[in-house]
Image (cartoon, rainbow, N blue to C red):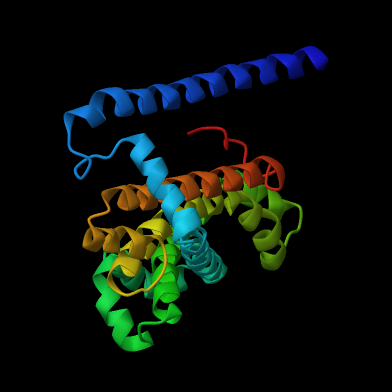
Length: 265
């Protein structure tokens, strides 16, 4: 057991070191190869971006606030969208009547991007927080809904037949076979929806917000502060990376019984 643990931990450390080396090499090339080839306005160096981050963090004191505001909007919309989308997806996948009714609307609306509805949602819900959160719910919901319904359809007939042969009724079949077998699809759908949420909130904050990372990126051009723009972009990637890793950690712990392929890319 100890040998297996050391072997797995050693392999994980090896790949972690490779990741760190690749990031350091990329920063080195950016600082000493790419940045000198262009003006600071076009492509600021990592040191210039770090200086800009210091200005936003200590002088303007807005960076942490903007990060918190954007992340709060994303998480609220993502959670609410998941709460509504998962049961609907389970119903669509489980009942052919519901699928026949909902299928045209789901597949039609899933091809209408949330970014195209920004103006419509602003008219419906105003320019406050409600419109931004509703857009994230919209962007999140269809991804999770379709993934969940697909998971229900992918359940092996042998599992259903085995449960029926043991005397399971429809309710027991749903909760003890359908839901557990669909968890991996729900998990992946929520992970993909999180990425979509980041895209939507940035576009929304660029057009109708007075705070957030999208607002920071969009308004940096007014002050000719390209380094601030890159700070917002890098913070967006950093927050996305952290939330994705936390969700993968949840898959490796809380959902480990159901999700077995979390370590895959």
